[in-house]
Amino acid sequence: MELRQLEYLVAVAEEANFTRAAERIHVAQPAVSAQIQRLERELGKTLLDRSRRVVRLTAAGEAVLPYARAVLAAVNDMRVAVDEVGQLVRGTVTIGTVYSHSVDIPRLLADFHADHPNVEITLGTDSSDNLIENVRAGELDMAIVSVGPDEQPEGLGVEVVTDEAIQAVVHRADPLAKRTKIRLAELDDRALIALPVGAGIRHQFDRACARAGVTPRIAFEASTPLALADLAERGLGVAIVPASVPRGRAGLHALAIVPEMRGRLVLAWRSAGPISPAARVLIDRARRLLRVSARA
Image 1 (cartoon, rainbow, N blue to C red):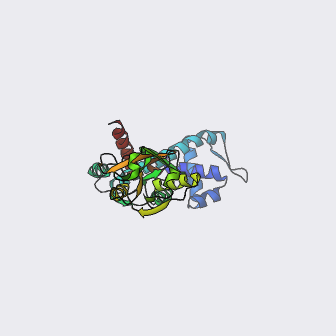
Image 2: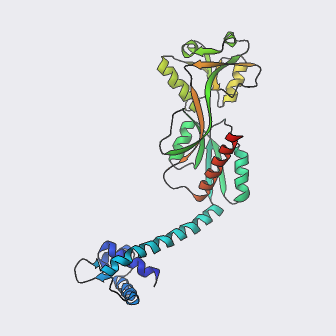
Image 3: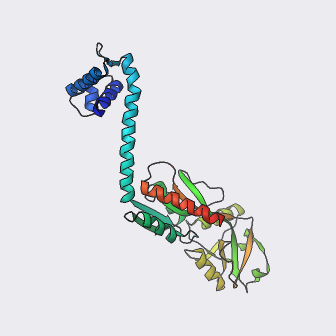
């Protein structure tokens, strides 16, 4: 019994015609007939009823067909497994991140590279909006992005990195440093320091301002929350940053924004569509690293 005999049997059964089956598998029609006849002789049963214009399976053929399909599927799975091993040895992965985050990317990549030294790794930075679209489009295998507290990007799986409040931060000498809270409406006439449009936190802030009828006056933009804090520490305005940024900085004072805004950093990857073996391994490692860090 040969694999091609099973393949030909399945093709004829599905096409109900020898000629169409031969065209589908790119083999001459007499060869298809001959191989199926050999299979029938080996099994000692007629598998196809050739007496009609439309070829049909006999009772024996109906019994054999599921097993033929299972064998062919198992062989295909075996080939895929071998291909995946090859891709894992010499594959590529592409990663994107926002400009500032708490994930230990150097450790992640160093550990992965130690086990898979021939996999090529590309790492870049961009805004959350662009990163999310690039992951969806398959241009990135995974990315660390900023999203809203209840946001689930369509078509993506996510693992939470951080989930924290968004605060207003000022220099210690600013009159607002005497307070612990500030309403969005009170920021209407202040010089604000924010991330660029497209960044996750900026998106949350702009959306909250629109709901409150506030038109923010953005005096300065910088690409990272730490850079925003540096500008605020120079007395240049009110920075809109994650709550973790001002901690431990004596020159800054943080105010809770009312109503509260929250932002999340997440690891994102495609939840549907093909993912290379190398990317799959790296995503799994990144998720485990995040879970370990969360418990620490």
